Length: 159
View 1 (cartoon, rainbow, N blue to C red):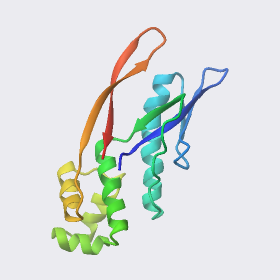
View 2: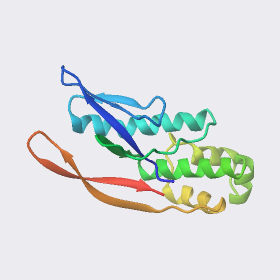
View 3: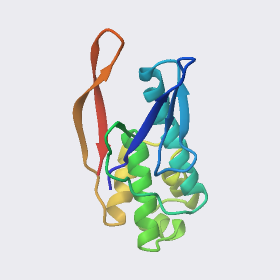
View 4: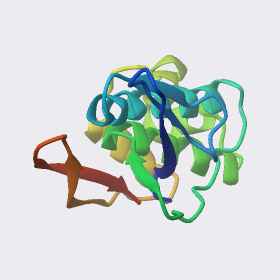
């Protein structure tokens, strides 16, 4: 799955840009300008999706992008961990079972599976292979509008 979600950005009179994600409960943030709001949105999205993992709920599927919406993707390592979590849920693989497959401790697997814990991407890739999944990272340049200029920015999407 791609962990890139549409969001709505609303500008209020006091120049506050509020970002909300219709598909992800609790993923809300704001910024002083559109660029800052989008930067904050990536972190808000990652934290909210991490809460689904902690609560042992399914990760929501992104809806199609509607007119006026922007797309925000989580960092590749977070997307990889979300995919690992989803695969483990789908195939009913426990952390103990994955630890045995990988020859690791239960604690190590818990860290690999935790979106908030810092992990090396190679560890997560190895765990993904152990559950029959892979990692594909694709990038495409998108434009981020500033008041006076357009600045290229990379949008990361993970499948």
